Length: 146
Length: 409
Image (tube, rainbow over all chains, first blue to last red; front, side, top):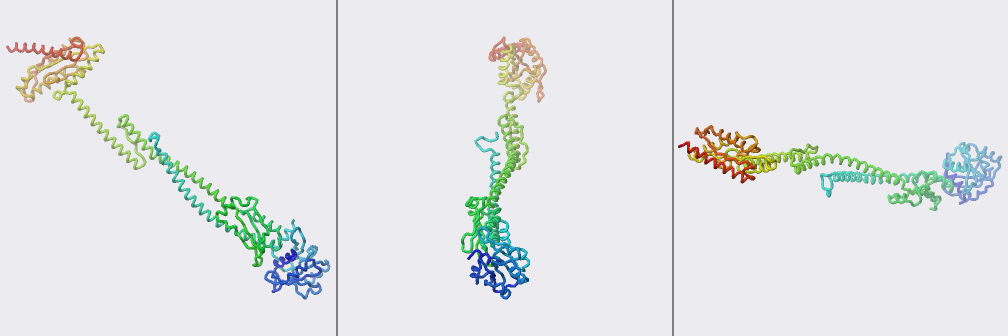
């Protein structure tokens, strides 16, 4: 399993939604660098739910009812639009670019030395309506302070 | 201690040893028991503690395992275990491979503490790392035995302290006990020595605090008193016997052997000092007739009366003796010469003028013949002197006989 995939699944594992169905739907949006590995990990059991990863076009996003977004290369404009569109839903957002964390993404993957690192936007997490385990936050914070 | 032989242990040493042995045994027994109990209890708590630590470590390291973050895991381990009594720790991942491991900088791996912990049966604590009930790894902790070392060393220190303190108290106790026991014994010995060496029976053992010793002292004192009484009685008997041996039973005057003894002494003294002495022999005339006519009781009364009268005419220092039968002797020492002796003879004859009245009412006129011998002119030694006095007395008797015969005619 790729490190990125593992990290994403780890984040999913430590996240709780207000209403959880049998299926944990992660949607990959846009051109992603590591999305392929994620797509392969469909069917894994994560926190007692079955993971399904789909590549979704940003236009169809609303209908697909995703629990989480995995965002690859996306412009800021497009991101803001997406956020407005999805506001009010408990949606986990993970981005491959750290830039998006400054404008509302919750988790941004960032390579820091060995192993995958990630940044966290605590404000976004607080507004999202999701419950994220503090264990991750500690991991992330420790990355922010080298 | 002079009370005991050097080859034997002194009472003090015995008491001290007993006290120390008792204290050491009691403290050691209690201490060892407490230590054992303490170790058992401590082991239980240490195991629990280690288990708790393993669990909290498993909980803390969980996210690092999930995200495969070795650096964070190492940091967490160090942060959590740095100040704990843990020698080594390992975190395994789901495949059973070592994810991270940590060993304490305080103790070298496999050191005495770890060995001690192993000996004490401290199993390494294990805790599963799980995420949502799914095991994703395990944590293993090895105790460094510091808890045991601390406990044992402090326990032993306290034990030693206790032994020291109780030893000190034991010594003091033994000293006090010694004062209670040995003191009376020493007193007893002292009194016994006094009795043995100085024959002084006057000393007594003072009362002791311990009942048995007090009793012993009392018995000893009673024995001493009895001995003293017996000795006193013996002495009295002895002096009485001595008196009897040197006295004549009838008259209470000195007997012949005593007279001769005194005469010998007086001769030696007179010779050394260049003085003179006189020996007078006195013989009753017609004593046999008195006995034959008036009976022995009258004869005895006559002899007693003569003895008394002789005693009354001499000085305090002079000696009057009954040599046997109706013969008396007087030792005059010191004396000026023959003239003085003759003065005494004259006094004797005067004293005999009064008649002696016996208990049966018979009046007897005592009559004596006196012979004088003076040292050194009539002899140098006792035999010579006594022989001379005897001779002189005989001559005097002859003269008196002649006189009395003439009176009768």
